[in-house]
Image 1 (cartoon, rainbow over the protein chains, first blue to last red):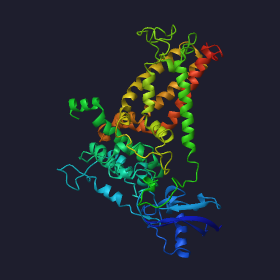
Image 2: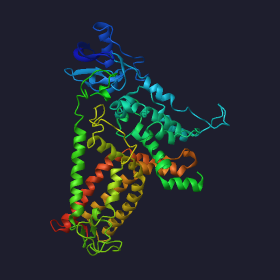
Image 3: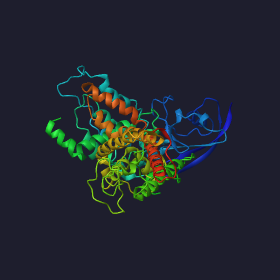
Image 4: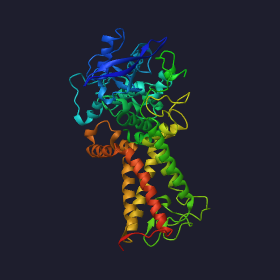
Length: 248
Length: 261
């Protein structure tokens, strides 16, 4: 059944902006992105929103709905009551460009800082052989659609702009874990994870895991295992001694 | 708010959060739960009596191992190598700091108290009240990296708790024995589901295929590990229940329900 919903949508740019009220039609089966598109079609033709696949796979339509980092296309209107005001804002960790569109280039900068996959020097493409059991841990992290909701919700950068330089964020620490756990990767990922990418900033409060639309267990399967590997390398004298004695 | 979500380049939204759900409830409940346990455990640790039921062999885990000459006769399962202790030192002083350290540095409890006690952050997408944040990069929080050492000791203490429970069963079967057994089983589940244990068992391996036994172990611990939070809370509850039961029986308030004498 169609009904009229009350929406508050943030509109503005880096200089100024605020929440604007809209009454807009909602039909059965619709998601928040449908409503934003209806607003564009009927009341706010210049409303800026980034979107692409409308299937939760491109990671473009990340925003905050009633204060919670979500994908606009994966948030069903049926999760709200008909008299509930739905507030839609851009992600609050990144610089705003206009309306619901933010500048996410912070993430691309962090991505470039991580050395790419480094196979053994004597192995050519086409010669890679590995057991499924050895790669499946890394494969979980390959589900990432780079929506940057985890980066957006992580309080290390969300609440502390000054940490952006030193902290790569959960998405890229997970990328480091993915490479570190890859059976054919030979690069040293552990020490740089702590010293250059700021793993120590993470206090494992699991917000990245909570907001991940792909349900990747970022904290349990990537960040904590990396913290443990860092502890092996930097903070555990017994492991250090064992490695020296047995040349592991 | 001049920094964080109030930084100049970000969307100008004055509210520290726009969440409409009861985001404040889980940290509040966590604070209440942790505070209740800390108060109970502190009182009982310093109580100094009603921790041993000689006729049934029940020893509360808060006083195990009891290794000083101050311990009641029979409660020292491993002898009394230590002299009599002044009253202000808990009789379980050898194990308690490590058990406390194990839980304080536990990855789940860290999440719990960082959110609820330190409010860093109180809830996801809720601006935290602190001006600066350095996480676990420096002293004192860098000590969290020693979690594995507390795990090693907690593992040994779990063996001692198991011995205590089995010893109680040699006196026949009563409700107290069952409570001790359930408690120690859950303590094992909590201890083995630890993230450091998961890492030690096989998490640090690059090639699971070359270590099938450790991979199997890692797989089993991973299954337990997803319930680490539930086990963390359940074991707090069972520790209190176990201690309370032993205390009530030892002080004669209730008598043990005997199944097999």
